[in-house]
Amino acid sequence: MSRRDFIAAASVAGLLPAVTGTTLADTTQSASTMWAPAKALDAAMDDAVASGRIVGTSVVAAQNGNIVYQRAAGFKDREAREPAGIDDVFRLASMTKPIVCVTALALVDAGRLTIDDPVTRWLPDFRPKLTDGRQPIITIRHLLTHTAGLGYGFLEPEDGSYHRLKISDGLDRSGLSLGENVARIASAPLLFEPGTAWHYSVAIDVLGAVIEQVTGTTLAQAVRAIVTGPLGMTSVDFIASAARPPATPYGDASPEPVRMTEPFTLKFGRSGIVYSPARAFDEAAFFSGGVGMVGTAHDYLRFAEAMRTGGPGIIRPETVAAMTQNAIGDLQVSAGPGFGWGLGVQILLDPAKAGSPVTAGAWNWSGVYGTNFWVDPAKATSVVVLTNTAVAGMTGEFPLAIRRAVYAA
Image 1 (tube, rainbow, N blue to C red):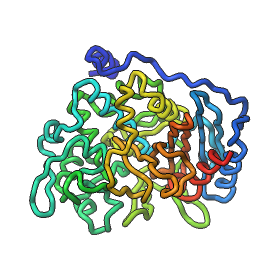
Image 2: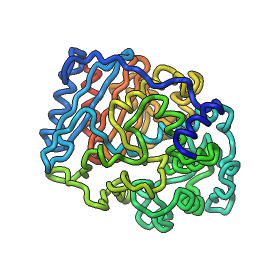
Image 3: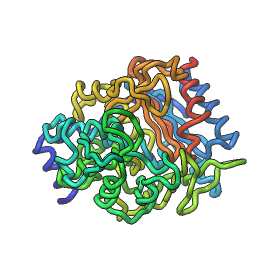
């Protein structure tokens, strides 16, 4: 089925909203605007670039439905002295996850999927076991909330089961199909009884395989038809365009970030992450629902704002509300006290406990290529911060400085 045919078929089946895009009024008049936090944001970006923490970055913010800040700093390609641009494409890594989760939730809204479906309804062979041999039921809810008992290779020691089984985290060029990788995930022992703990994981890659079964098409086609196409997110896809390549990626190092090789290993978590920058152009690579997409800050802002305003034409307001509220009770997430998890995004529950300047009720996520975003419903504000520097653009001083700048005014 062609992309156009699938979009038409999805529309007829009631899977697609009757929208053609999300319009954000652009009230910016220059690189920096009269928005109160603008000067502080400029300073945070300039300091990060001048200090060498970040090579290049693109930041876009909206408030009350208007773009109030947009600026790029640093380099798209440092060695070529190519400056970063506001419409540069970046590797989104785990900022892919919320988009794929919304795709699944749209299928729930359309009655094609239920949140408490066992995964085996759609993937009959996906039956991972606990270490005692028991085979518990894993549901779509468990996948969305990272409570399925699955893991990530970089979160375990180098002799862990995900490494031994050569499970791909979606960032490398494994040569596996999505089905083959999901089979390997199913063969790894579960870390805990589903629903009893939270652990960041490849769950959204498994969810991507479920979406393929529900829609009868590829994950890329389903996401494009259900979310990115209707929102006009033309740059956001699983395959980068050779005519519009993503910013050159760099990895944290001292005294300055180093240009990524192919492949590139960065120590992170309990072991490390193997990056393959060329994967973004590899049409044979499986579509990773967890980390596979590329896109611009402007286009990602369309998604963030659509969800902030109730998911018009994509998912129901009630579904957005469920997605952006804590769905895991008192279970602890890796970010520490003050945070919870919804149906695909992290939720800020207690700013004081979290040590965050952001308002309670805000939701966010980030990516290991150096990206992050957050939505603050109470302030009617969405901010997208994309960099080409892993992982300094995702965690540490730079993202915290950006948040402080926005809330200091």
